[in-house]
Image (cartoon, rainbow, N blue to C red; front, side, top):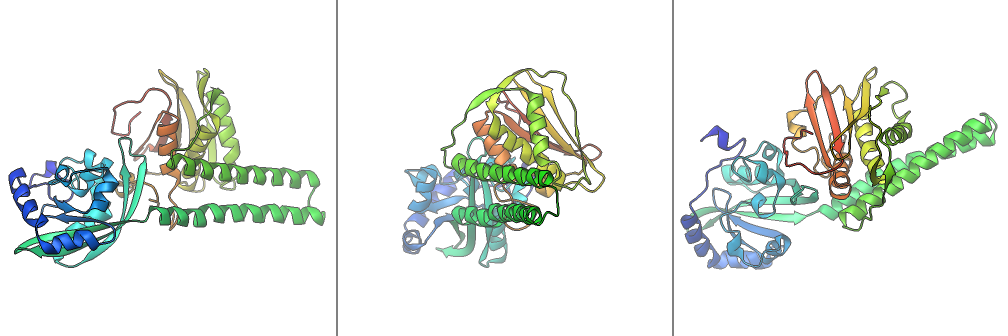
Length: 383
């Protein structure tokens, strides 16, 4: 096996002629036909190279395919337009990110062990990778006419995951903020603090809650294709000042935020609220990834078509994490998290028309950035 052709699962594929012959045999098998009709979820029948031999109508409807012959011989990630399948040396299953793909892991484990295996799979789909899909997957060995095959089922749990994030993240954070407001109100009522300090804290907490509500509403609208963008003239320096002011105190002062002034404060046009959301998430992530005494640096640079905003923290992202970092619901922060980096990508690229990426190197830390202006074909995460 040529290492250059895969970073994980086998790259080898059956010939087109062999796939067509086997697919025709499978399509006429009564067991397979019954499975295609009755199985709940998206069903694929795969050969030992993970290539599609048959699919039910539900899966074809999902990918907008009217003729199953169009996907015969492809692999699951190729069919659904997974961004990692396009980045992989030999398609679905062969990229570095595929090492953590629940779909590939389930298929490979089932084929090697001849047991039923299951898991969950987060997929970044579409040309820009901003369409998110989350599946519960199940892979089972199947023998048809003496030939070992694999039955692979995907059940869409995207709505379930979105609801879980709303409950665990948004409502939890909102409840914390409400609790703080009540605490300051009680202190104010018994005159334990000055009215000016209490009012200032209550206003700041109210503003934070309003930002959270608007931010989550914007994310829901963006995923539904209903988000309205309202560009207005902005200045890079003022944008950074506003974003930094909104997160100061998050770490209680144990991490320093250093803002570097860009030389060129030329005006540009963007949606203020969306840009602040993207940059705010970058800064919050940097603060959460930092240790006491660290310095988080924030700055902007002038680009040919608009400014580039950058946020750096001293930490380094692991190899496992970096290939999934923009996937919806992927997180290193605990169950139910995982909207920050996904939201950056979705809002920054699809709605602000920029490019969002990151670089992470020992000695230089991790830098997230958004470059506004014309898109580039660069795919390595470099500005």
